[in-house]
Image (tube, rainbow over all chains, first blue to last red; front, side):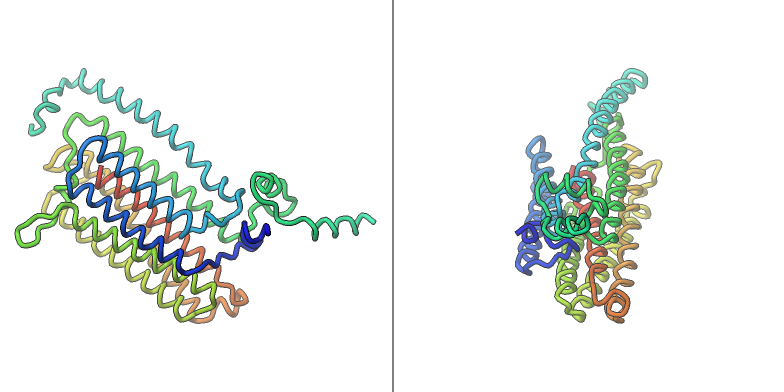
Length: 120
Length: 233
């Protein structure tokens, strides 16, 4: 019972071929969708939202099925997936700092006109 | 008496699942991760690699947010013309599909490895390596076009913010290095499967194919993020 849920102790990963083929096709479809976001020149929040959505779906399927995380024991899943959560704090602090740097550059260099007129 | 109690415990305790299983694994006397050691080590290596690529991407985010000069539009920079009609980002799209195809062949190679089908495992791994080499070849084309025709340098480029070049060469260069290393890694593992190395030394256990696969899928995974943040954003 426990073995069926978590896989045998040696971590032997053998699964039906169909699930790999399904995910493979899904990755092709999701990649086409992300390319279409650029091809159709979608802009603004719609563009960024769709890029992130397709990115996380693709990454999730690769990690869960191709890398077999879905069948690993929870202790290993936690050890792999929890540390990268620190990165969200890193991204947040760097984004705040970036805003500050950008504003400081505007004040010190006085290049505000280049934002208005990109072709300097 | 004591010995008997221990033996009974060892046999009767099933592998616990859920959070209880996490506590049981982490407080285990002998082994925390119930996977082959090579697989646990590969995962820890990939975790460290995650942080390296994240640092590159966060650094890229920061220079892009802080520059007061306009960022070059990747959709135009990476467009290719076929018969005079420029198609945006087409080379990058083809590279993405090549890498996804290789991920699929790798997943199948792992599967056939565990089924003991040596011939299919070797062929699929070699196909994966060939697709990886194709990817690197296309990257060489992309780089030479950017350097020689567009005049992009790590310190300057004619299209806009000078940080574009440094971020591009650093991120795609490091990823390309990973793909190249993966092609070599795949070839070595495929050779060892084919020559019967694992039959002689590991008792016919092909878990090394899965460990190689973990690395290869990770390379594809990193590309998913680079494609989204550098090329599409």
